[in-house]
Structure formats: structure tokens, C-alpha cells
Image 1 (cartoon, rainbow, N blue to C red):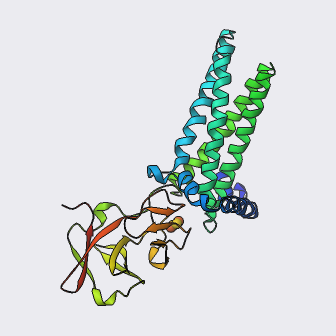
Image 2 (tube, rainbow, N blue to C red; image 1 turned 45 degrees about the vertical axis):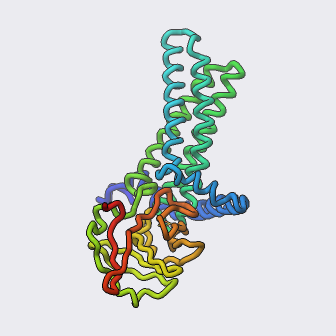
Length: 302
Ligand code: FES
């Protein structure tokens, strides 16, 4: 729509978010990533958890992106210093920084694609994530070409390619920020500890919790799920830590509860991630039975 008819022109970001022509490409890429992970067989679970960052309880991708950001910034600064001083004393440093950035960006791409490939229903994260990934691949290719040109002695071309790669990677980083700060991808969506009851709170008569069924209840204003398994009662926050899906609509398997949205399997006992994509544990609550009532409270209360 043109601005002459009074409507404000769409921003580039809004055009990406509303561009349905990106969807078939996203589908193809996401299917290919899913197939590659499935081909890993039993190793798929631990590798997927590692790439998601469950070992450190936040996404690995964001840590890895610091490597190319820092290294490529250093390379561009050293190139500028070399040109300003007409000196070659920092050329070797600039070349090394380009190479370190390439290694870091490649690792970040693998972790990022692992995070993104599960977003199949969410249009905006899916489309913005695809363009973010495409720009990062383009930036990586430009820095790869820059490295080759430098090694062949064509330093002027190497510097120009590096500067171009830096600009493209900067656009990609902007979209990455949009995914986190606007779409809240990679953010813990589970309730905060203070949103769960500190005092023992009756939530359900024990007789109304059958073995092997998921029952949703409220505790201190927060939705929770109750599950009885092998006679033991488990309670977890209902809102999935990964992206806010309802665990109460999930399924029980392998001693865990699987989220219906992207399939994270959380351990019933402690909320640990058995299978990704969540980087975050699911909050669990302590349970007890008093006067035939199931009572819960948040963990860590002395
Ligand atoms: S919302 Fe993504 S796995 Fe639960």
C-alpha cells in the first residue's frame, strides 16, 4: 500500500513478518533439520539438548553468537587501523579474527537452527527466523570469501568482503534481537517462583486424581498440572518453560510429560528436560496429602 493513500508504509520487519511466501522455504528447511536430527538416532536427544543449552539453563545459541560478533568487530577495526596507518602490523591479527569468527558463526548457526526448526505454527518467529538465518549464512559466506582473498594476497578485496559481511551480519543480529525481545523466543516462559504458592495449598481431593492422568488445577493463582504415577503425586507448572504451551494438554511418556506445542519432554520428578527443545527446566512443586486433600507448595521452602 502506498503512503499517498494515507496508510503508513510497512516497515521492512513487518513485511518479513507478513510474507507468507517465506513459509514453503521455511517448511523445507525445517523438515531437513528435523530429518538430520532424526538420523542421529539415539544420539539425537543428548545432542538436541546440548544444542538447546539445557546444561546451562539458557540457550547455547546466544552465547555462541558472541564469538563472531566480537571477532568480526575486531577484524574490521584492525583493517581500519591498517588502512589508516598504512601499516601491515595488524594484518595477521585481522586474518585470525576473521577465521575465529567463521568457526564461531558456524557453531552458532547449528545451535540456532536447532532452536528455530520447531517453530512451525508460529508465523512471525518462523518467518523472521528464516530471514535471520539466511542473512547469517550470507554474512558467513562473505567472511569466508574474505578469508580466502586475504590468504591469496588480495587484501583490499578481503577487507571489502569482510566489511560487507559485517554489515549483513549486523542486519541478521537485529532480527535475532527481534526474535528474543519481541517474539520472546529463547526466553523462559514458566511462572516465576513467587507466582507459585509459598504455603501448603489444597488443590484437589486425592480421590479425584486417577493414576496416569493429567489434571489441571490452580495453585496460588497459577495453573498447575497434577499427575499420579506409580502411586506418587507430581505437580508441575502448567505453562511450558519453552514457549508457554499448556502441559495440561500434553501426554505422559517415559516418566515425563510432553508439551503439545513443540514436544519438550519434562521429567515428572524434577522438571528436567529429557528431550528438547526447551533450554529451561519446568518448575515443579512439592506435594503431600492431608485430610484426603492434595496440597502443593513451591520448592525450596524450609
Ligand atoms: S511451548 Fe514449546 S515445547 Fe512447550
